[in-house]
Length: 364
Ligand code: ADP
Ligand code: MG
Image (cartoon, rainbow, N blue to C red; front, side, top):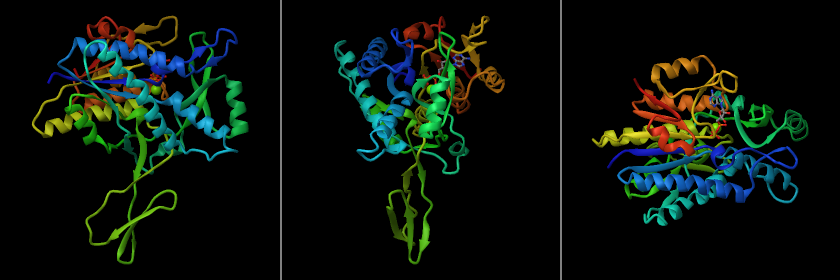
Protein backbone atom coordinates (compact mmCIF):
# COMPACT_ATOMS: atom_id res chain seq x y z
CA UNK A 1 0.00 0.00 0.00
CA UNK A 2 1.07 3.61 -0.59
CA UNK A 3 0.28 6.25 1.98
CA UNK A 4 -2.88 6.78 3.95
CA UNK A 5 -4.42 10.21 3.28
CA UNK A 6 -6.69 11.47 6.02
CA UNK A 7 -8.82 14.35 4.73
CA UNK A 8 -10.47 16.32 7.54
CA UNK A 9 -13.30 18.38 6.07
CA UNK A 10 -14.30 21.51 7.99
CA UNK A 11 -17.89 22.33 8.87
CA UNK A 12 -17.12 25.43 6.80
CA UNK A 13 -16.14 23.24 3.88
CA UNK A 14 -19.68 21.85 3.62
CA UNK A 15 -21.54 24.81 5.05
CA UNK A 16 -19.63 28.07 4.55
CA UNK A 17 -21.19 31.15 6.14
CA UNK A 18 -22.65 33.29 3.34
CA UNK A 19 -24.10 36.79 3.20
CA UNK A 20 -27.66 36.87 1.83
CA UNK A 21 -27.46 39.30 -1.15
CA UNK A 22 -31.01 40.58 -0.48
CA UNK A 23 -30.99 41.12 3.28
CA UNK A 24 -27.24 41.53 3.83
CA UNK A 25 -27.63 39.07 6.75
CA UNK A 26 -25.14 36.27 7.46
CA UNK A 27 -26.81 32.90 6.94
CA UNK A 28 -26.01 29.19 6.80
CA UNK A 29 -26.55 27.63 3.38
CA UNK A 30 -29.74 25.55 3.10
CA UNK A 31 -29.66 21.81 2.47
CA UNK A 32 -29.49 21.92 -1.37
CA UNK A 33 -26.63 24.42 -1.10
CA UNK A 34 -24.80 22.19 1.43
CA UNK A 35 -25.43 19.21 -0.81
CA UNK A 36 -23.94 21.00 -3.85
CA UNK A 37 -20.97 22.19 -1.78
CA UNK A 38 -20.33 18.62 -0.60
CA UNK A 39 -20.64 17.41 -4.20
CA UNK A 40 -18.00 19.91 -5.37
CA UNK A 41 -15.68 18.71 -2.58
CA UNK A 42 -16.31 15.06 -3.48
CA UNK A 43 -15.59 15.71 -7.17
CA UNK A 44 -12.15 17.11 -6.31
CA UNK A 45 -11.44 14.28 -3.84
CA UNK A 46 -12.58 11.65 -6.35
CA UNK A 47 -10.26 13.02 -9.02
CA UNK A 48 -7.38 13.01 -6.53
CA UNK A 49 -8.16 9.40 -5.54
CA UNK A 50 -8.35 8.29 -9.19
CA UNK A 51 -5.07 10.08 -9.96
CA UNK A 52 -3.33 8.48 -6.95
CA UNK A 53 -4.79 4.96 -6.85
CA UNK A 54 -2.09 3.32 -4.72
CA UNK A 55 -3.01 5.21 -1.57
CA UNK A 56 -5.69 4.53 1.01
CA UNK A 57 -8.14 7.24 2.04
CA UNK A 58 -10.18 8.17 5.06
CA UNK A 59 -12.47 11.15 5.60
CA UNK A 60 -13.42 12.96 8.77
CA UNK A 61 -15.73 15.95 9.00
CA UNK A 62 -16.83 18.77 11.28
CA UNK A 63 -20.45 19.33 12.25
CA UNK A 64 -20.54 22.77 13.89
CA UNK A 65 -23.18 24.37 11.66
CA UNK A 66 -25.29 21.19 11.41
CA UNK A 67 -25.30 20.19 15.09
CA UNK A 68 -26.23 23.73 16.06
CA UNK A 69 -29.13 23.65 13.61
CA UNK A 70 -30.45 20.31 14.91
CA UNK A 71 -30.27 21.65 18.45
CA UNK A 72 -32.17 24.79 17.44
CA UNK A 73 -34.88 22.74 15.71
CA UNK A 74 -35.20 20.56 18.77
CA UNK A 75 -35.48 23.61 21.03
CA UNK A 76 -38.00 25.46 18.85
CA UNK A 77 -40.16 22.33 18.56
CA UNK A 78 -39.83 21.72 22.31
CA UNK A 79 -43.51 22.28 23.05
CA UNK A 80 -44.56 19.54 20.63
CA UNK A 81 -41.88 16.91 20.87
CA UNK A 82 -39.10 15.93 23.29
CA UNK A 83 -35.81 17.84 23.09
CA UNK A 84 -32.54 16.22 22.04
CA UNK A 85 -29.33 16.21 24.08
CA UNK A 86 -26.15 17.36 22.29
CA UNK A 87 -24.58 13.88 22.10
CA UNK A 88 -27.64 12.55 20.25
CA UNK A 89 -27.59 15.60 17.93
CA UNK A 90 -23.94 14.71 17.24
CA UNK A 91 -24.86 11.15 16.33
CA UNK A 92 -27.59 12.50 14.01
CA UNK A 93 -25.07 14.73 12.21
CA UNK A 94 -22.71 11.78 11.68
CA UNK A 95 -25.51 9.94 9.89
CA UNK A 96 -26.70 12.85 7.76
CA UNK A 97 -23.25 14.18 6.85
CA UNK A 98 -21.97 10.67 6.16
CA UNK A 99 -24.91 10.23 3.81
CA UNK A 100 -24.10 13.55 2.11
CA UNK A 101 -20.41 12.65 1.75
CA UNK A 102 -21.30 9.21 0.40
CA UNK A 103 -21.73 11.11 -2.87
CA UNK A 104 -18.00 10.54 -3.13
CA UNK A 105 -18.91 7.02 -4.32
CA UNK A 106 -20.95 8.55 -7.19
CA UNK A 107 -18.04 10.81 -8.12
CA UNK A 108 -15.72 7.79 -8.07
CA UNK A 109 -18.05 5.53 -10.05
CA UNK A 110 -18.47 8.04 -12.89
CA UNK A 111 -14.67 7.96 -13.03
CA UNK A 112 -14.73 4.18 -13.33
CA UNK A 113 -13.75 3.39 -9.75
CA UNK A 114 -16.11 1.34 -7.61
CA UNK A 115 -15.23 2.26 -4.04
CA UNK A 116 -17.71 2.66 -1.23
CA UNK A 117 -17.71 5.08 1.65
CA UNK A 118 -18.99 4.05 5.07
CA UNK A 119 -19.81 6.56 7.78
CA UNK A 120 -18.92 4.85 11.01
CA UNK A 121 -20.88 6.17 13.96
CA UNK A 122 -17.89 6.91 16.17
CA UNK A 123 -17.74 7.39 19.92
CA UNK A 124 -14.70 9.08 21.39
CA UNK A 125 -13.71 8.80 25.04
CA UNK A 126 -13.20 12.05 26.98
CA UNK A 127 -12.38 12.71 30.66
CA UNK A 128 -15.46 13.34 32.77
CA UNK A 129 -13.53 16.03 34.67
CA UNK A 130 -12.16 17.76 31.56
CA UNK A 131 -12.06 21.50 32.46
CA UNK A 132 -13.71 22.22 29.07
CA UNK A 133 -17.07 21.25 30.60
CA UNK A 134 -16.83 24.44 32.70
CA UNK A 135 -15.63 26.65 29.85
CA UNK A 136 -17.50 26.30 26.54
CA UNK A 137 -15.36 27.17 23.48
CA UNK A 138 -16.77 25.16 20.57
CA UNK A 139 -18.77 27.23 18.07
CA UNK A 140 -21.93 25.64 16.70
CA UNK A 141 -25.00 26.69 14.75
CA UNK A 142 -25.78 29.68 12.59
CA UNK A 143 -23.81 32.93 12.50
CA UNK A 144 -25.24 35.93 14.37
CA UNK A 145 -24.47 39.57 14.93
CA UNK A 146 -23.36 40.59 18.41
CA UNK A 147 -26.83 42.07 19.10
CA UNK A 148 -28.60 38.85 18.05
CA UNK A 149 -26.21 36.81 20.19
CA UNK A 150 -26.95 38.97 23.23
CA UNK A 151 -30.67 38.57 22.65
CA UNK A 152 -30.37 34.76 22.40
CA UNK A 153 -28.25 34.67 25.56
CA UNK A 154 -30.93 36.64 27.39
CA UNK A 155 -34.01 34.86 26.00
CA UNK A 156 -32.88 31.27 25.42
CA UNK A 157 -30.16 31.18 28.05
CA UNK A 158 -27.48 29.69 25.87
CA UNK A 159 -23.92 30.98 25.71
CA UNK A 160 -22.53 32.79 22.68
CA UNK A 161 -19.07 34.05 21.81
CA UNK A 162 -17.20 36.08 19.17
CA UNK A 163 -16.27 33.65 16.36
CA UNK A 164 -14.43 35.73 13.75
CA UNK A 165 -14.52 38.70 11.40
CA UNK A 166 -16.12 37.91 8.05
CA UNK A 167 -14.81 39.09 4.65
CA UNK A 168 -16.62 42.40 5.11
CA UNK A 169 -14.94 42.94 8.47
CA UNK A 170 -18.21 42.35 10.40
CA UNK A 171 -18.15 40.47 13.71
CA UNK A 172 -19.61 36.96 13.50
CA UNK A 173 -20.95 35.51 16.76
CA UNK A 174 -22.11 31.92 17.39
CA UNK A 175 -23.37 29.70 20.16
CA UNK A 176 -20.64 27.92 22.20
CA UNK A 177 -20.72 24.52 23.93
CA UNK A 178 -18.10 22.53 25.92
CA UNK A 179 -15.41 20.85 23.84
CA UNK A 180 -13.62 18.16 25.86
CA UNK A 181 -10.34 16.71 24.56
CA UNK A 182 -10.49 13.38 22.69
CA UNK A 183 -8.59 10.54 24.42
CA UNK A 184 -9.43 7.30 22.60
CA UNK A 185 -11.55 6.21 19.64
CA UNK A 186 -13.83 3.32 20.58
CA UNK A 187 -14.52 2.06 17.03
CA UNK A 188 -10.86 2.25 15.88
CA UNK A 189 -10.74 -1.44 14.88
CA UNK A 190 -13.93 -1.11 12.80
CA UNK A 191 -12.48 1.95 11.02
CA UNK A 192 -9.29 -0.01 10.36
CA UNK A 193 -11.11 -3.01 8.93
CA UNK A 194 -13.09 -0.74 6.61
CA UNK A 195 -9.77 0.68 5.37
CA UNK A 196 -8.31 -2.80 4.96
CA UNK A 197 -11.28 -3.82 2.83
CA UNK A 198 -10.13 -1.14 0.35
CA UNK A 199 -13.13 1.12 0.95
CA UNK A 200 -13.25 4.64 2.39
CA UNK A 201 -14.30 5.06 6.00
CA UNK A 202 -15.82 8.34 7.16
CA UNK A 203 -15.09 8.51 10.86
CA UNK A 204 -14.98 10.73 13.98
CA UNK A 205 -17.64 12.92 12.35
CA UNK A 206 -18.06 16.16 14.29
CA UNK A 207 -15.10 15.03 16.41
CA UNK A 208 -16.97 11.87 17.44
CA UNK A 209 -19.70 11.50 20.04
CA UNK A 210 -18.16 12.29 23.44
CA UNK A 211 -18.50 9.45 25.95
CA UNK A 212 -16.97 8.88 29.39
CA UNK A 213 -15.89 5.63 31.01
CA UNK A 214 -18.17 4.84 33.93
CA UNK A 215 -16.45 4.05 37.24
CA UNK A 216 -18.00 0.95 38.81
CA UNK A 217 -19.58 1.19 42.25
CA UNK A 218 -19.62 -1.72 44.70
CA UNK A 219 -23.06 -2.95 45.73
CA UNK A 220 -22.79 -6.12 47.83
CA UNK A 221 -21.58 -8.95 45.55
CA UNK A 222 -22.06 -6.76 42.48
CA UNK A 223 -20.35 -3.96 40.63
CA UNK A 224 -22.69 -1.41 39.14
CA UNK A 225 -22.14 1.07 36.32
CA UNK A 226 -24.71 3.86 36.48
CA UNK A 227 -25.38 5.53 33.08
CA UNK A 228 -27.84 8.12 31.77
CA UNK A 229 -31.60 7.67 31.68
CA UNK A 230 -31.58 5.54 34.89
CA UNK A 231 -29.81 2.69 33.12
CA UNK A 232 -27.43 0.68 35.31
CA UNK A 233 -25.24 -2.18 34.08
CA UNK A 234 -24.06 -4.68 36.63
CA UNK A 235 -21.75 -7.66 36.93
CA UNK A 236 -20.46 -9.86 39.69
CA UNK A 237 -17.47 -8.53 41.64
CA UNK A 238 -15.16 -11.37 40.64
CA UNK A 239 -15.88 -11.15 36.89
CA UNK A 240 -13.08 -9.38 34.94
CA UNK A 241 -13.27 -5.56 34.78
CA UNK A 242 -15.70 -4.25 32.15
CA UNK A 243 -15.58 -1.10 30.07
CA UNK A 244 -18.85 0.77 30.12
CA UNK A 245 -19.26 4.12 28.36
CA UNK A 246 -21.97 6.70 28.46
CA UNK A 247 -22.57 9.82 26.33
CA UNK A 248 -21.97 13.32 27.67
CA UNK A 249 -23.06 16.70 26.36
CA UNK A 250 -20.35 18.40 24.34
CA UNK A 251 -18.82 18.67 20.89
CA UNK A 252 -15.26 17.45 20.44
CA UNK A 253 -13.05 19.38 18.04
CA UNK A 254 -12.91 17.40 14.81
CA UNK A 255 -9.31 18.40 14.08
CA UNK A 256 -8.09 17.05 17.42
CA UNK A 257 -10.03 13.80 16.91
CA UNK A 258 -8.76 13.50 13.33
CA UNK A 259 -5.20 13.87 14.60
CA UNK A 260 -5.84 11.19 17.23
CA UNK A 261 -7.29 8.93 14.52
CA UNK A 262 -4.25 9.45 12.26
CA UNK A 263 -1.88 8.69 15.14
CA UNK A 264 -3.87 5.67 16.36
CA UNK A 265 -3.91 4.09 12.89
CA UNK A 266 -0.14 4.66 12.51
CA UNK A 267 0.63 3.19 15.91
CA UNK A 268 -1.61 0.17 15.40
CA UNK A 269 0.09 -0.55 12.05
CA UNK A 270 3.50 -0.16 13.74
CA UNK A 271 2.54 -2.69 16.43
CA UNK A 272 1.68 -5.15 13.63
CA UNK A 273 5.17 -4.59 12.17
CA UNK A 274 3.95 -2.41 9.28
CA UNK A 275 5.14 1.14 8.64
CA UNK A 276 2.16 3.25 7.62
CA UNK A 277 2.77 6.79 6.41
CA UNK A 278 -0.23 8.97 7.15
CA UNK A 279 -0.67 12.31 5.39
CA UNK A 280 -2.96 14.44 7.53
CA UNK A 281 -4.79 17.06 5.45
CA UNK A 282 -7.04 19.63 7.14
CA UNK A 283 -9.35 21.25 4.59
CA UNK A 284 -11.01 24.52 5.51
CA UNK A 285 -12.17 27.80 4.00
CA UNK A 286 -8.76 29.52 4.15
CA UNK A 287 -5.87 28.39 1.94
CA UNK A 288 -3.48 27.84 4.82
CA UNK A 289 -2.14 29.51 7.93
CA UNK A 290 -1.56 33.25 7.75
CA UNK A 291 0.61 35.63 9.73
CA UNK A 292 -1.08 38.94 10.65
CA UNK A 293 -4.38 37.37 9.62
CA UNK A 294 -6.89 39.92 8.24
CA UNK A 295 -4.38 42.76 8.69
CA UNK A 296 -3.04 44.84 5.79
CA UNK A 297 0.31 43.05 6.17
CA UNK A 298 -1.21 39.50 6.07
CA UNK A 299 1.27 36.87 4.88
CA UNK A 300 0.93 33.27 3.69
CA UNK A 301 2.92 30.61 5.52
CA UNK A 302 3.92 27.85 3.12
CA UNK A 303 6.02 25.60 5.30
CA UNK A 304 6.67 25.11 9.01
CA UNK A 305 8.63 22.58 11.02
CA UNK A 306 7.44 21.34 14.40
CA UNK A 307 9.59 23.80 16.36
CA UNK A 308 8.35 26.80 14.36
CA UNK A 309 4.75 25.60 14.62
CA UNK A 310 5.04 25.32 18.42
CA UNK A 311 6.51 28.83 18.64
CA UNK A 312 3.69 30.35 16.57
CA UNK A 313 1.06 28.48 18.60
CA UNK A 314 2.62 29.65 21.87
CA UNK A 315 2.63 33.26 20.64
CA UNK A 316 -1.18 33.03 20.81
CA UNK A 317 -1.93 34.23 17.26
CA UNK A 318 -4.36 31.38 16.51
CA UNK A 319 -7.84 31.75 18.07
CA UNK A 320 -9.06 28.89 20.26
CA UNK A 321 -12.32 28.27 18.37
CA UNK A 322 -10.94 28.17 14.82
CA UNK A 323 -7.28 28.01 13.72
CA UNK A 324 -5.98 27.19 17.23
CA UNK A 325 -7.26 23.59 17.38
CA UNK A 326 -6.10 22.92 13.81
CA UNK A 327 -2.54 23.90 14.67
CA UNK A 328 -2.78 21.98 17.98
CA UNK A 329 -3.98 18.93 16.01
CA UNK A 330 -0.99 19.20 13.67
CA UNK A 331 1.42 19.56 16.61
CA UNK A 332 -0.06 16.47 18.32
CA UNK A 333 0.24 14.50 15.08
CA UNK A 334 3.89 15.48 14.45
CA UNK A 335 4.89 15.00 18.10
CA UNK A 336 3.54 11.45 17.97
CA UNK A 337 5.78 10.72 14.96
CA UNK A 338 3.53 11.74 12.04
CA UNK A 339 5.52 12.80 8.97
CA UNK A 340 3.47 15.36 7.06
CA UNK A 341 0.40 17.50 7.67
CA UNK A 342 -1.28 20.26 5.67
CA UNK A 343 -3.82 22.99 6.32
CA UNK A 344 -5.35 24.19 3.08
CA UNK A 345 -8.40 24.79 0.93
CA UNK A 346 -9.59 21.98 -1.32
CA UNK A 347 -9.63 24.27 -4.37
CA UNK A 348 -5.81 24.28 -4.28
CA UNK A 349 -5.25 20.66 -3.25
CA UNK A 350 -2.72 19.65 -5.92
CA UNK A 351 -0.87 22.99 -5.62
CA UNK A 352 -0.67 22.38 -1.86
CA UNK A 353 1.13 19.06 -2.31
CA UNK A 354 3.54 20.66 -4.78
CA UNK A 355 4.32 23.51 -2.36
CA UNK A 356 2.62 26.38 -4.23
CA UNK A 357 -0.36 26.78 -1.89
CA UNK A 358 -1.55 25.90 1.60
CA UNK A 359 0.68 25.29 4.60
CA UNK A 360 2.86 22.18 4.89
CA UNK A 361 4.00 20.99 8.34
CA UNK A 362 6.88 18.58 8.87
CA UNK A 363 8.73 17.41 11.93
CA UNK A 364 12.08 18.99 10.91
P1 ADP B 1 -13.59 24.69 10.07
O1 ADP B 1 -15.07 24.76 10.01
O2 ADP B 1 -12.97 24.33 8.76
O3 ADP B 1 -13.05 23.90 11.22
P2 ADP B 1 -12.84 27.13 11.50
O4 ADP B 1 -13.72 28.31 11.37
O5 ADP B 1 -12.88 26.35 12.76
O6 ADP B 1 -13.11 26.22 10.23
O7 ADP B 1 -11.32 27.56 11.26
C1 ADP B 1 -10.93 28.24 10.05
C2 ADP B 1 -10.94 29.73 10.29
O8 ADP B 1 -9.81 30.11 11.07
C3 ADP B 1 -10.79 30.56 9.04
O9 ADP B 1 -12.01 30.78 8.40
C4 ADP B 1 -10.20 31.86 9.57
O10 ADP B 1 -11.20 32.84 9.67
C5 ADP B 1 -9.71 31.53 10.98
N1 ADP B 1 -8.36 31.98 11.30
C6 ADP B 1 -8.02 32.56 12.45
N2 ADP B 1 -6.73 32.86 12.50
C7 ADP B 1 -6.18 32.47 11.33
C8 ADP B 1 -4.86 32.54 10.78
N3 ADP B 1 -3.82 33.03 11.45
N4 ADP B 1 -4.67 32.04 9.53
C9 ADP B 1 -5.70 31.51 8.84
N5 ADP B 1 -6.99 31.45 9.31
C10 ADP B 1 -7.23 31.91 10.55
MG1 MG C 1 -13.37 24.34 13.30
